[in-house]
Structure formats: structure tokens, C-alpha cells
Length: 140
Image (tube, rainbow, N blue to C red; front, side, top):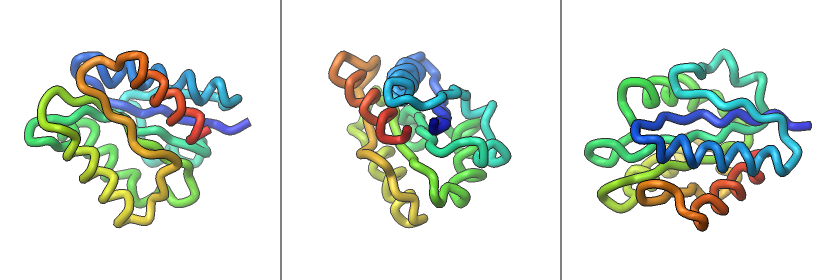
């Protein structure tokens, strides 16, 4: 049985709702799943998991959340070799540039994403929920 971590930051609850769908998808694929907020996760936990899904909404000028998520991401991103990795998050303005930039950073670091990133505007609807579940299955 694979072990999956779903690590997220959510200000309004939208990305947290996406995280629940991701976790359900991984569970449906037979994985053991643990959910963490960005403040609860660190590089010291990486060895415990086969797959990790990271979720962060677009903030400010279409960037990752800067006080909790970005520092955690900076700590772990160089240590994700050999892991199944997925990205997800919600946005309320703009159009997804933060996710394009995040994916490009992963590409430049050699982090092979297990599935295309999932984004949605505001709260996840049924379609976004299905996409999040598929992301969870891909990292399981």
C-alpha cells in the first residue's frame, strides 16, 4: 500500500475542499493518506510518503502563499526526486499564471508531476472535484 501526503494552504476553504477530493481519490486508489497544512509539513516527513499532492491558492500577484506555504515548498522542493508529485489550487482573480509558474519551477528542478495540475475558480464544482480525485489517484 502506498502512502500519500496531501499538503495544502487554504485561506477561504476552497483549496482545503480540493485537498479533501485529492485525499479521497488517493484512498480510492488504495493508498494510506495523511493530510497536512503547510505549517504542519516539513522535509523531515518526506521519507514517510511515496506520493505528495501540494495545494496552494493563487495569492496577491499570482504567487504561492508567502508566509507558510512558500517556506515549506522551498524546504522540500529539492528533495522530491523519486516521489509521485501533484499540484492543485484555487484562484479568485487572474487566470492561472501562478500554477503555470509553479509547474515550470517543478520542470526546471526535474520534478516529474504524476498528472497535470488542477485549478479551479473559487470553490471546486463537481468537475473540479472529479479532477482532484483523479490527481489523488495519480499520486497514489
